[in-house]
Length: 91
Image (cartoon, rainbow, N blue to C red; front, side, top):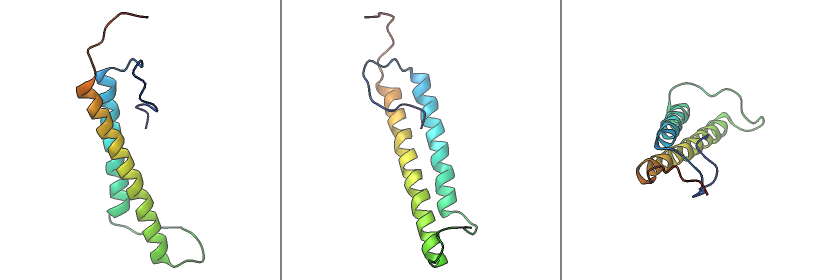
């Protein structure tokens, strides 16, 4: 999630950095969705609870991370199309 933390209008961000940040976030979202809904068994988890509950918790957490990464990626692509052209004036 290296694109940015705040939406500061004075922050000098280029369209290229927003585009690359969006690509990175979408790739991470794809990995998270694959981990959540792909094939394979889940190893580990919380002891003393059934394996099905551990699997559900793991899938839910990975899916939440995937959705969050996807939304950050969409925010970055929104910035690609809405950023104003850079000016070299400094205040």
